[in-house]
Amino acid sequence: MVNVINVCRRMKIRRVAGYTLLVIFGLFFLLPLLYMIASSLNPDEVSLLRNMSTPRAFIPSPVGIQNYIKVFNRMPFGRFMFNSVFIVSTTVLAGLLVNSMAAYSLARFSWRGRGTLVSFIVALMIIPFEAIAVPLLLLTNRFGWLNSYHVQIVPFIANPFYIYLFYQFFLKLPYALEEAALIDGAGWFGIYWRVALPLSKPVLSSVAILHFLTHWGSFLWPLMVTRGPEYRPLTVAMQVFFGGQYPRVWGEIMAFATMMTVPVLVLFAVLQGRFVASVARTGIK
Amino acid sequence: MMRRRELVTQVSLFLPAFILLLVFMVTPFLMAIVLSFTNQRLIPGPVPTRFVGWQNYVMMLRDSQFWAGLKNNFVFVLVVVPLQSAFALALALLVNAKLRFTKFFRTLYFMPTVTTMVVVSVIWSFLYHPDGLVNRLLSSVSFGHWEAVDFLRNRSWAFPAIMFMSIWQGVGFQMLIFLAGLQEIPEFLYEAADVDGASPIRKFWHITLPGLRNTITFVLVSTTILAFRLFDQVMVMTAGGPQDATYTVMLHIYNTAFRRLNIGYASAMTIAFFLIVLAVSVAQRFVLWEEKEG
Image (tube, rainbow over all chains, first blue to last red; front, side, top):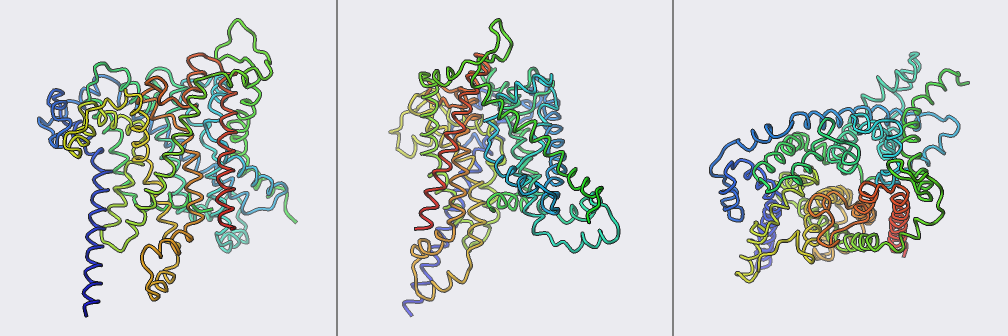
């Protein structure tokens, strides 16, 4: 009897401890983001700086959207947003097509040299972007591509890691449906497009999310290849705004940061399960 | 018999990716090797481009900034990789526990990872302000014994501050990978241990850790590679300062290519750095493999 009570008590203590830790870590990760949003809503820089280290920093007073309006007045924020969205969506869409096609060809057919090419793709995965950034700059400069959209899109479409993820998926995909289509006389491109791709939604969404996350946050390359605001994405615009401002107007900086972060956080909240699945997939070997 | 047209379609599905990879990955990589033996400039100057042998590599040996950056890279890896991986595992165990709302908290923990590093750097620059929240918090937990520090302008605090922030941003990603690994461990192992009356600590050592072996290897190796790339944070927050306290190899490569326009030397550092990172990952895999075998 005493033993049962003890066990019950221990379980209860453990549960309370568990929830306490969950909440503490939750605040640890959430508060800096709330801090960003709260600061962006305070248009009075003096009050912002006075309250910056008190709990009142999280309840902006006064409240207003003047910081947001000032950001729009100070720079072509809409243009930066468009640049980022356009560059990332084009890269991700083209990447889905090109990488899945390549993987399909490697996984389904047995043309000569195919095995070597699979090893070639795997070997390429060890080259980090940083190892090719400088010569890639020289190369794209020779092409006359600097300061453009395509210099931020074309080199990032094909990716050995995404090809590999698709490849593994296609290897496990049952062949029966495609075989049926083949007997019906469909061509291989048609089979890939109308039969295999619709069955690949899980891997398509995983790759799309990973590609989106890495390219949306990319900073080094656009910093290297863009001059002026015309083709500049949000990350570089943020750095230029943040680094070029003396004295810093934190309210406006946080308004900029909020506008570039909240849409992605909302997207993440909506597609939460798929984000989790896509990250889990990177750990599969 | 395969029809010729079919073979053409099959191969042509592969071609677009293949061409793109050849042009934008293989070519630049080979170029980096060749350029590292030349005096190539970003903008053609009065000195014509020519081969200079090992000169760039010799210069690297004497370049104190390169070594300062490399040292910082290693410090960053040695501190951040174990801490971040252990923290990620702890979080994964927590959100994998049989508690309610764990899905909600899992989402919260992953939010910094979805926020781009540039934005995270900006937010934390504000938090690290001399009169900012971090100083205030440290002052209240130490009952006023903490003296306010200008974290990002202080030689001894700047790099630890950036490390702490990097862990905050990146840990959610590894947590999810660990979580996926945890969910692959068969439940019956734990049930059998319960029947034997094993303590939670024993279960962790004898079931959870061995079950996560592959995941741990993957997380350690991939986090190490990511940690070596350190650039965004230091570029935005400190530009490598104060006095090179947060300087990194990638920052030095960037400055060499853009401030000094010296592509040849930047390429040499790129290749050397690539080989160092590769050697570290191979060594890591080797060590972790040995343990698994032994």
